[in-house]
Length: 194
Length: 247
Image (cartoon, rainbow over all chains, first blue to last red; front, side, top):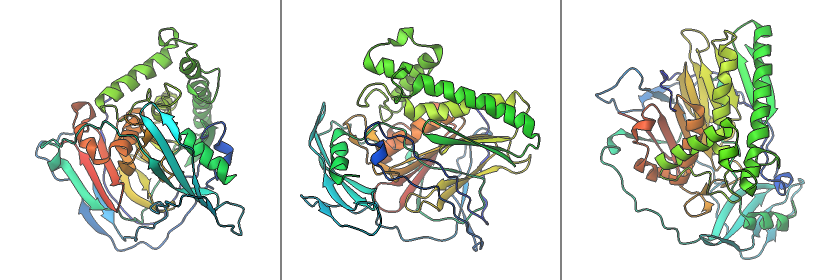
């Protein structure tokens, strides 16, 4: 099922950032309309930065023509913002009216019984957009203990998350495709009255 | 560059080619659009009459499903096994939901409508799952940026490739939306992940699996079935990233 296609991956940098705009897919029939709609985003960035190139992959000794190789180029690093990181544990909804139409605050969902145990989530909204989901109750998962193969470690390459200025012809990013919000989340959204 | 946007699956499929024969391109896009709509009719979990919805309700057995649904079912089974259930379309509430594979898979399949019309240079971008062929020209690869998890209008990485696929997943869109199939709660392994390789369906599923497993993915990314794929993920906390390519 896996076609062997030659990949050639190289790295270059400079110029304009073009961002594909896309509409959000459906979340589910009941809560989809409640979710704030991300607007198509377009950004241009013109001044090419001075670029320092660093090889991203360790050079394996057994490379073959079908193996992809990669280089990355870094320009500047931004301090990570905290939007997705904020953890809210307030037990009651705190609604802060804002000038825009969106709701802000934190909202607890009902405890939802799953086959793995009870789940309860709390969402944080900023202007009607979900900025955080905290899992308040979490079933004790039967996770396999971590085993790291010694053969894998040498081919792992670590870096710091960066922002790049680059001339691109397309963009890859997550869209909502997986079913996944639990009933607890749906009830939290209803409480937020989005 | 000739361009066409097709709205389907609740997202936009954006197709572009440097080929100047726009009539051929438009005909290929029409065929691709019909195909995408057929895929939606069969696989949408939002259409009660789709085969997948009927399977979810227990109204249709996989043995009686169409060959396409059987094919996707089997590919998902393979990927579930290969990822040690980090990708598991059967663990979703409501039953079998192959959405995490189908978008990339269908984008990959749609390549044939362009190839058969002699369009050898093409980019098909299905809501972030990207299939490219032929480069922009023979010496210029397609340059695909990876959306930064913290800044929607910035890119964090770039892959330049002539032929192949790139799929990304992340919990930056609408919070944590990917469920860890083993425990049934939102996954917390990575906050963003990208997989580059020959097949967009596989890359799509593997990007989801990276979100679920984070660095635990090292348990399965070394599988020889994935030897032509490159993995990149951002840790759930902080700014550390890691990437992996087979030696």
